[in-house]
Image 1 (cartoon, rainbow, N blue to C red):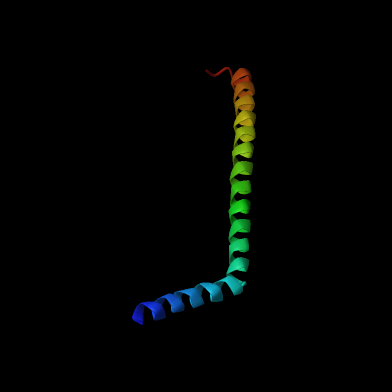
Image 2: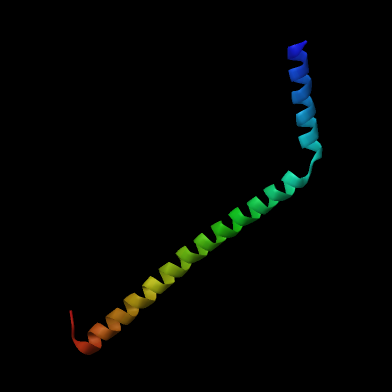
Length: 69
């Protein structure tokens, strides 16, 4: 009898969780936050490449004008 009661309790818990939609909302927010973080990281990488390129150009122009190495 004890095993049957445990199985029944487990099945009841799974059924209760499958009906509850509060976890789905939290999961959706989690996916949104993960997507936003990935977009920010990709944007930062793209921006970093552009900024590095700009500073290389400025460094070259300043070196030519000043006569440095």
